[in-house]
Image (cartoon, rainbow, N blue to C red; front, top):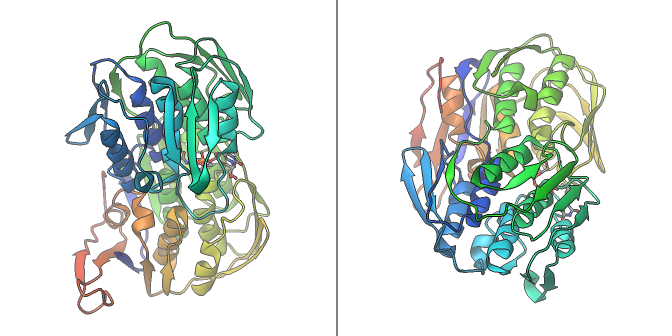
Length: 445
Ligand code: UD1
């Protein structure tokens, strides 16, 4: 129940890097279950995130062994023999559904329940299930959200009604074990899909087409093995830092990032009056005279990413004029709006659309992080606001940002992380100030 206390009005400036992508490392960890050999899988520079720990707990529970070498993780999965994922672990996060494809493929049977995740609207798994059925799985849905799948997978044609990221990844992992060729059409094109393809091919799979809407998985003809892999830098974390610089009139350079994964964000930042400069593996953003952006449409990649919609709303809240955001990916992803309005923003939501009347400044307030990216948006608002902002429920932020407050403090912010006192009372007064460093300059998380 920690909270962040932010003293607003300080510029975000300097240089930093970002950690590996959460949305890549989670499917990559699930895919490691496809390695039946005694060879090790070494994952380099794995971010210390709550969701990563949850996935490692599940792998251990299934029979994998996990070792840590500083920021690397070394996995042995040859002894994995359990096909049932305990309910309390499944409900920890949405990504636990990724286990379905690899477990079914490896063991011919899997039993799990519907996963948990952010409260951003209904998150059905029908596309995952239908796709696996097209590959030959027999699936039974039982009371209490329990799902059981079994069968020997054969290749096939799968046409997704919607380019779901998770369904595409689940199907790629299942298809690797199938007897014939699989073609996934209308596949998601996110960079994280390319990351998963690269990792599976390193293990010995034969997948092509990731990054386009048609992915082909050929039978590998041999058992998959181990290898050493590093996932892409996290484009959502990168985008969050860039918005932090933009709204504080700062000057931030991100090093060792992939600007080509952030094209839609960088275009919108430029439209909003922010100076953007890109180079090989680097992006620099300098705050300018902000202005409204008439319309931003939130869509699957290469469109503007839904995970950066909440941070974008914070930026647009401070852009003079009227901006409009159309959220086309999730049905209820505006829970940060009442919180931003509490800080003085003027945002009106109607269905999937938000109308933002830009204001000159935001005011510090006590606000609640209702989900992961909503939490990030509120931290950004706190950086730009006058006075003190308290963000509660930051366990959500810990799911996807490693030491967000420390990185921002290294870039000039003043944020303290405060633990609730043991008696469960209010944090102020009897609280333990965990960090209050505010040293501008370079921060390498
Ligand atoms: C992944 C990301 C998440 C991101 C999202 C969209 C991970 C761990 N998470 O989530 O951060 O916000 O992509 O870019 O990678 N849908 C169905 N049926 C299904 C599956 C999805 O109707 O079987 C719908 C969802 O309700 C949602 C939309 O499709 O409205 C997008 O979901 P999807 O692309 O599957 O997102 P996730 O893989 O859950």
